[in-house]
Length: 260
Image (tube, rainbow, N blue to C red; front, side, top):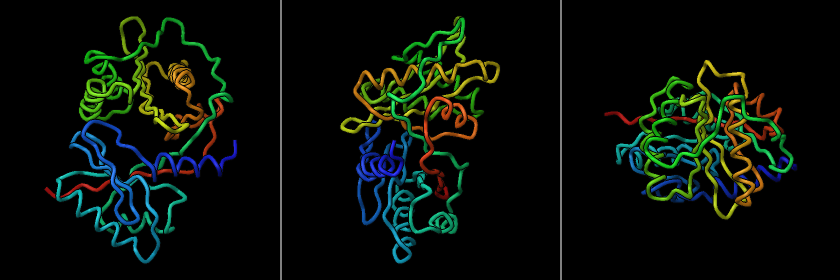
């Protein structure tokens, strides 16, 4: 895989040419910024920018004003190769708070090692309804120690309005949810995004995460996609590298919360 070419393709198709990711969302280009504005329970933020030292601060101020007027918390998704080089410092100075850095990893499906089996006693099942969405949210809260109310609402909305935009799965050991994950195919591009892969603490290190990646990779291949994309944490990066994913750059969410 030509890393530079794939990164350029990623920027073009998934960032500069981004499509709305859920019901009620719209993607807009304003100046040198591509942003998504969505309902309160959706993802609001900046996906791509082409800025330099002369216009970055004004662009940041414009986005703050836009989302603050809507009462929306939003995220500026900063990648390691974005410019200007001090964009993260400028965001922090404007009141954004950085979350933990992740690694953008991409794998060409035909090159991945997907012969990993499902752990004994575990089955991976598709999520299609409210009950399944509740299982995904339950795993999310246990795996990441974070509130899953927004995820629950987003997933239910997408399954109800446009189920083709998301593939969600849950790993069950007996009737107990022990892992869950989502996949978001991007129509008209070779990419499919893998999101939210998590395993409850008692089941980590037993192959559940690998099984969830392999399952989604097979679904993506059946749909004609070529690449899988993941924003990997330090915990998941080693597993993904063993499966054949390559790191392309870093990504850091900078979050702005308007004053109430």
